[in-house]
Image 1 (cartoon, rainbow, N blue to C red):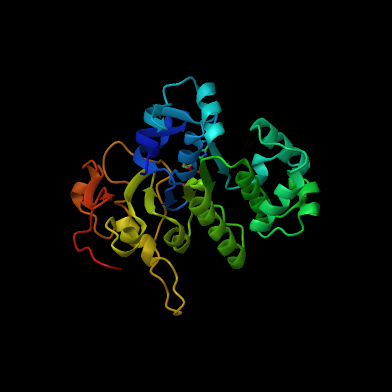
Image 2 (cartoon, rainbow, N blue to C red):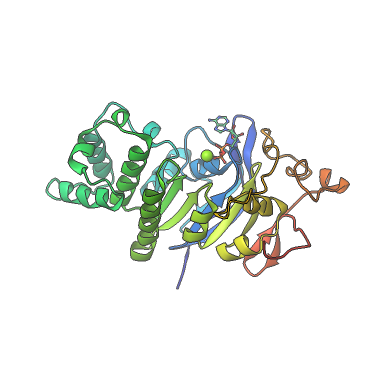
Length: 317
Ligand SMILES: Nc1ncnc2c1ncn2[C@@H]1O[C@H](COP(=O)(O)OP(=O)(O)O)[C@@H](O)[C@H]1O
Ligand SMILES: [Mg+2]
């Protein structure tokens, strides 16, 4: 029997006076992998940081429910304690999440102690195993280094290894493979899937890589200008995309046949979600006059598949 472990409902979050992500709703069953895709600046990282109660994030409205408990109403410190207990995160730039001039060994010991998972006798063996899973075979050297001395890709793998050691029930990964070359990307992708299959770890993975999303995700959520514009089973979203933005993202992926992909001109508005009108209208090949004043709520377009706008001439791409 699956159970809902995390959900957000009509969540609006951001910095200062403006939401950077607005009206976002989704729920995750235990052991499910949700991939969030969309161009830079669409609010994906903000959403992950909000789930972890990061200090710079403000909750404007909506709710977050963790294991049946509405946590968005709790005082922020209590919320952060609960979230950090249950959720691990691998940041987009892991160097920034660690102290750059403190050895990984010291930082690993501290992190494991704070989660009650440190055992001095088992530590080395556990580190060796976790590092091997992310292809860091020179573990003795790496664990004694400071983050500043390693490359971005190595730091990213160390961060993933620590997340595996901490063994939280929910793992949030912000572009976990973006700094890695293709073969290591594949290894990391397999390890993430293994974490779910073997340990039931629920995951939200932000990625630009639609192929990775197709491999890993049970469901894919597509974000644009701070809004979730499409959400559905991975195979449905990739084969039968509905929102014109999702279609554009898919046709922008280069194939191996040497044909030029169809890229989407322009970039998302930096102003984030707007009060009315579709944020995508300036770039949308199907835009009509009414798109400037309509409001776009997510609606059902298939079984377990929602979109806020639908290209009616829908079909496999
Ligand atoms: N620390 C911050 N302070 C203020 N605005 C921010 C901060 N971080 C991100 N933003 C803004 O929030 C919006 C969403 O950014 P982000 O969540 O990082 O997008 P994504 O992860 O999809 O690339 C962007 O307009 C970005 O400029
Ligand atoms: Mg980001």
